[in-house]
Image 1 (cartoon, rainbow, N blue to C red):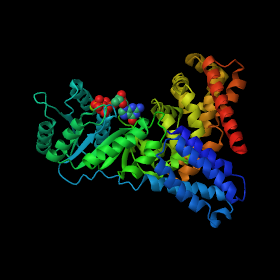
Image 2 (spheres, helix red, strand yellow):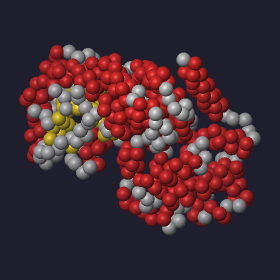
Image 3 (cartoon, rainbow, N blue to C red):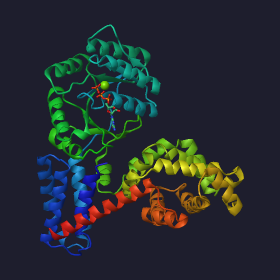
Image 4 (cartoon, protein in one colour):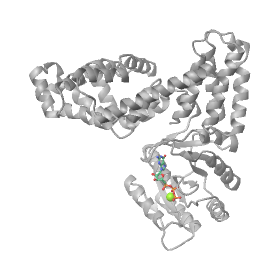
Length: 493
Ligand SMILES: Nc1nc2c(ncn2[C@@H]2O[C@H](COP(=O)(O)OP(=O)(O)OP(=O)(O)O)[C@@H](O)[C@H]2O)c(=O)[nH]1
Ligand SMILES: [Mg+2]
């Protein structure tokens, strides 16, 4: 997420690091780079101006300049200011009534329908019964799209094919919801390519006559300043309660996210980070600021982890770990959960200090790697999975043959497992602090050192890297070269 903004800000802050005491000139230079990376991320100009005014005021104060770690303090100042620009945010959906109506609106293709489904899923997970309403009568296929979503989620969908009036549909849907004791009604409205009077009139009419409790605007985060402009226009017409910014998993530059609240006064409620129905996050300014600065986002990490492993399963797992009974079989189960496309990526992005590895993984065929590891475990007997110690050279050869890998790969896997299981044991039953400590140890163990991994692989088999691996290495080196170049430039400038 926001790779270039992250890199820009982090390298701006890095240039100041290690300089010991900072002079005002040094600090100004670093601040210039901070400003530059915000502008490059397409943050609205008034926002950049306000942001820099505050940060500069604080950063040039004598207390910071004379402190022992001025660059560290600057990270704190930038963090605080990011939080201030992004917030305050009220994450609640305010479900205070028997039937609560949420209305989604936005331009065509911004992700309204998908987001309706994601919200319904989130509500289901919290034990709240939602209903989806097909209020988009512009596109004939829109009704079907919503029904497909509803079926996937097991959520009722209200639609009517005998009228062209969305107000009628919405009104009847709310009545139906009251009868069926549905707590939340989500209205999926029509979009247009551009903001036009007809669209606004239709939405205003629904707003007036159905009186939704919350009106959310869905904007495509990839559209940059256009997203901010459309938020302004929709807010003028409808008085929005919140913005849901989608497609932040792509190469959105982040400018829209940083600008919307400041320019329109409307808080961001949720962000969409993928096409899957689970890819909706509640928006918290502190977590986001922390992620942008490469410091991870523990709250979201815990939320995501909870989503992967349900509570009962987690309790069982923790017990096994505490008793030292965690086997390769369990390892495989956990691993398989993580091997959903894109999930590992996401989790790494949320861990403090894992940004670099995450970027590397983005280029890597991690799905292939995961399948390989699962294949190796599958080739073992139950006894071997429970007690990897019994795997001797001949068993190793047999497993390797079964999985279609070199025996060395079997060895590496067992070594990794042996390294990981005591750490996992530590993770079990610990509070957040203990978990963080364990994550740090995991990082230090070198298992997550991509450079070391590559070396081991090469030394281990002595074979030439596959074209895919070579391409990856090339990309990595290219990236390193660009980074060095940038540092040099900054060093000179
Ligand atoms: N990568 C990514 N894709 C998304 C996200 N949200 C929605 N999409 C995709 O965006 C496309 C449009 O989504 P829809 O939900 O149909 O958009 P809409 O606003 O309902 O579109 P109209 O009904 O035509 O106005 C689909 O291909 C979605 O899968 C997201 O957070 N990330
Ligand atoms: Mg739609």
